[in-house]
View 1 (cartoon, helix red, strand yellow):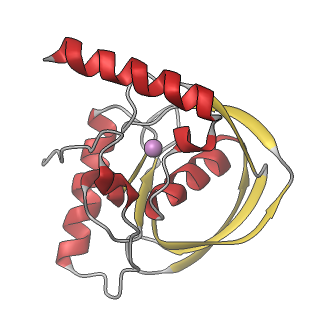
View 2 (cartoon, rainbow, N blue to C red; view 1 turned 45 degrees about the vertical axis):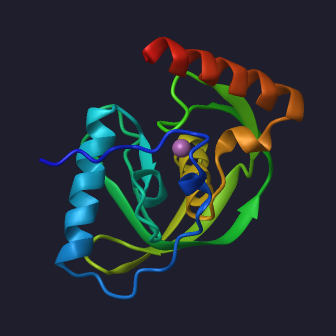
Length: 167
Ligand code: NI
């Protein structure tokens, strides 16, 4: 089991834009395994490759209570999105910060799974929120950047304080 270091906001590498995976080979399979191990150990419900400083369109998610329903999304694309919903989000790259974010309520996404099979996911609820949150990471967006300037300033101050205390 290999745990990967997770980048912490405001690390500029979190703003890199990931490129599509062109071939699912042993290197990608190892990345998926390591990302899943890292997500479960954190513990978290989702992790994008961007967060472990690998800039490929790969996401792992598990929103199940039993923590045994791993979903791998390679090259995910939103086909359609409907409605709006506000939900409290957190992020392994922004520890200790939980804020309400508005996203589409229902989405339809195409992606490849870990074996390269193409799949369509139609979902709402927590999985829809999680997929949108992780897909944002792949284009270099962190959820706190969707908040007001005032909230972002407060969060920056809080994170700065946390980092000082950790030293
Ligand atoms: Ni995140």
